[in-house]
Length: 369
View 1 (cartoon, helix red, strand yellow):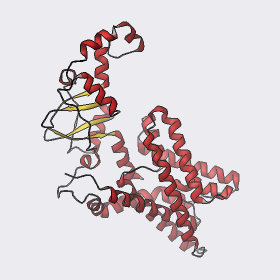
View 2 (cartoon, rainbow, N blue to C red; view 1 turned 120 degrees about the vertical axis):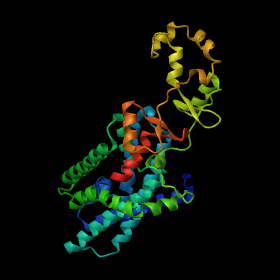
View 3 (cartoon, helix red, strand yellow; view 1 turned 120 degrees about the horizontal axis):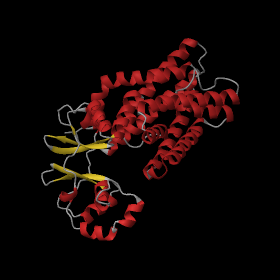
View 4 (cartoon, rainbow, N blue to C red; view 1 turned 60 degrees about the vertical axis):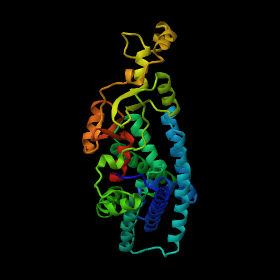
């Protein structure tokens, strides 16, 4: 079974991936055929207001994080603010790579410019190849797309397509109004939008195994299934013998809405959610708790009668889970059909992890970026 990748290797992958991505962006700028969608707006800011592109990139990253806060509101997690230092790193690397590429003479031959455009596309794909599997913190662009997908329920691939088109249109409008030309948008923008994903798939097919063996040096020589590759292994669980008060305290302390119930052999015997507890506290004929219900059912009396119940007495016994050997399309179908955001992963009757929608969207990002 695959072990957790070591932090030094993950950080190395992350930083190296962003560096290679920005080198690709710098080459696309140098080719003067249009930059990739991810940098179209920052480059437009540079062309219109003369702000150095690295600084413009940082400004754009901060704007995207602010947009996530507005979109998600209370659902926005503080850890997502780490996208700002990640954006600063992205901006610093953008400045450094632009300065490095600027040392070379400007290409006037259209053939050379086209070659530079294609090399930049491959470099961006290589950067994503290393940056995404590190799974540290997404850049603000990906974070915003994930937030939109989570908020609207629209598939991540569709959100990404619309987001890329939107940023290109915004960049085009900015340049057309500000400098009366296409500016950051050109044939290179279209090429990057189409070919980065193609190049990434080809690179992953050839070198993905080697990359993962370095990232996970302790992996056994057993081929991992897609579910095992992307599932979360550190799972919060409840004991069947916990009382209701202990279970509530556990859920609150770990800021989770529910957890699998496992016995001493790590075999899953149920699932307890805060909704299950709320239904116990609601009226006998009510499936959900409303604010006016709590005022009329003798809340304190009912609570005192339930507080000593054990988790095994409350937990739902029929748990919807996925098998570690399932294909991802089967997992998606189970989650969608049952309107779930996450499900336990079992192998040989034992729970080995949990898979949620965000795991799948991150994997999708790697495959279609």
